[in-house]
Amino acid sequence: MLKIHPIPSWLYSGKLQVKVKTWFDGEDYEKFGGLSARFGALLPLDAEKGQKLTAVIPNPANGCSNSSVKLSGSIALSMRGECDFTTKAETAQAGGAAALLVINNEEDLFEMACPNDTSSLNISIPVVMVTSSTGDSLKSMVGSGKVEILLYSPERPVVDGGVALLWLMAVGTIICASLWSDLTTEQTDERYDELSPKDSSHGGAAKDDPEKEVLDITVKSAICFVISASLFLVLLYFFMSSWVFWVLIVLFCIGGVEGMHSCIMGIISRTCRSCARSTISVPLFGESTITSIIVLCLCISFTVFWVIHQAASYAWIGQDILGICMMITVLQVARLPNIKVASVLLSCAFIYDIFWVFISPLFFKDSVMVAVARGDNSGGGSIPMLLRVPRIFDPWGGYDMIGFGDILFPGLLVCLLFRFDKSNKRSLLNGYFLWSIVGYGCGLIFTYLGLYLMDGHGQPALLYLVPCTLGLSLVLALIRGEMRHLLTYGNDLMLDPTEEA
Image 1 (tube, rainbow, N blue to C red):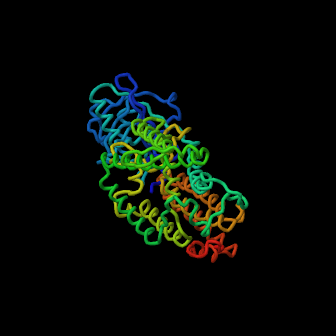
Image 2 (cartoon, one colour; image 1 turned 90 degrees about the horizontal axis):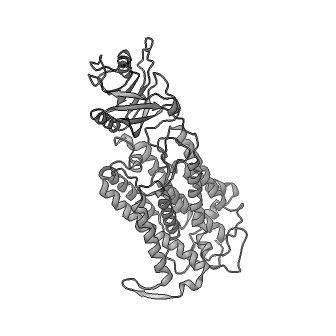
């Protein structure tokens, strides 16, 4: 399960973020990211108001003493270490430098602060920190030709349009998965209230489709799953590489093809029942409908196209389509039998999320969940087990993301509550399904609020989603005096199917 992680963890809110635009021998080269210090001059908000200056590496390279290389009117590139940041800035300013770029010795960035005694501090040039990889690129360029740099700090919008789209996709996926069986099966004349056109037997927990295989999750399997997910996460953290990344891509593609095929065939079966009658014998697969084979070929072609173009700017669309179809299919196959199992699974996932995001840095060098979600050591790729949407109005670009687990875990509970309402013929307002959807949507909003308040650092989404879904449902049952009824639902599935749950 991955986290909603819209921007790199080293980008902070406010005016501290810096764009480093470069030119090599007079031609546009690349834009890098940086972080400004708490001291020094402020940078312009627009690139048009910035000044293009030549980059120079001082001698000594640490910038702690007067440089033998002329710095007048240039941007000094100084290595971190051996003296305070303010000392480097004062030395560069005394040498005539117009700005200072401090090259960190690692990929993470932090806000450069002033020493305790700042009474005599008089720094009037901007000071910016860049990552070690950015510094290596700049130093290599300086050694090969003329490098010019322009520094500016565009403002980031508090809320980007991509967040709203991602919210709609996450909430919509759970709603579609809950209603999918009713939307893709033939309606009967038996109706009730507003929730569904088709009543179900066995308390609404079984036999929606006699041909559909359903996997009931038990308490033991819920605990084992969370433990297995933790072990898998640690393995990804320690052994993530380009080939492991491609293994994950292949697994995602297999699940995506299966999910898309299942969803499309469900829609076709509902709208055109005659399309599923013509069959053909396929080697290794046996008897299959012609429509199913055609749809499968189209799904495979779509997935192959996505794999080939996954680095393109529009690749997120294909990834999200495959992911949504896969999650809808999973929520049709996997099922929570009762609220007790749901409580165990979501409580374990709640602890799992918090531990691997907030507590794991105490045992590892950084947050395991964030490092895996960020795709560290994956050869530059982001693992595909998430939905992502580009940040539309953000000058820094990037993506808003949400992991599949943050949709699937609450989605299992919402599907359970939908079946509960359906079997008890509850209306939307008097049931639990609608309120669980509202709670999930609010939980996502709280997650984004947490991201904003914590300067974009990855958040364990289930920290907010579990209380807003499971917690809200239990509190609502307590207020209505229906806690016993909710807790016993699903425990008597082997009784007379006509008996009310």
